[in-house]
Length: 256
Image (cartoon, rainbow, N blue to C red; front, side):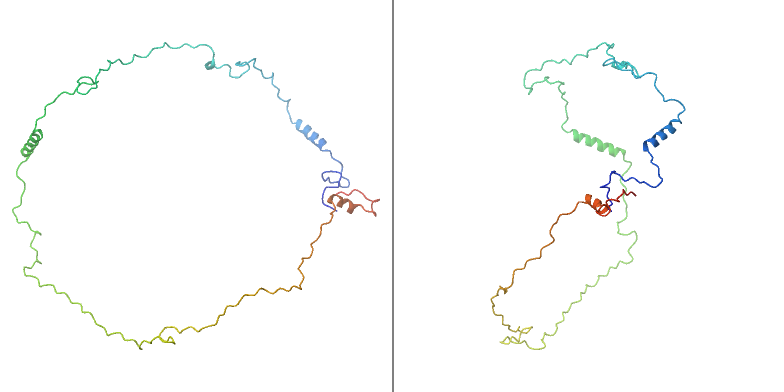
């Protein structure tokens, strides 16, 4: 038997057992709704009247809050308009470029103030006199001869030091290098080299031949693969397995 639902009368699988009565889902749903309706203590709430509809654009009829005074179309009282003050008035600009002419700018001309030639020297002299007037005496000076230490140096010696003697470095002259054996002279046998002379190996040029091919052998042909054939539909597979020429008279509907 095929496990697919195709081939049966119903699109969904319905179970049927012996002694099991048929139950309508609509009947079960109605009974459940009737049991739930018995739990209601009173009837369903219904408003006294339906919602009110506005009569046109801009109407607040039927709204909860009512009209808003800020959006009213009536004219509102305004404060008296006070114009701002006048602009600044100035005299018209005087003609001329301004070079060498007095009293033609916005501000007044700077007054001339005399300056002494030796003003800096006189000021410095006054400051120096004021500084000497504030001094109480001369500068503090020691009568002692200045020395490096407060006391005499106990390690000081008046004797002259001997001249410094430098140790002369004597270079050691080693013995001349003598090889263990005299150098070999280069000859036909190459005996003076470190490595022996490589042996000669014959390497003649050989023409490369093509790989031999047997003309008597046949060409390789791969064996043929499986060929396509007609396949029976899976829809008819269930019917042919359940009904045949031997049991078509005694066939019955099977359910699980």
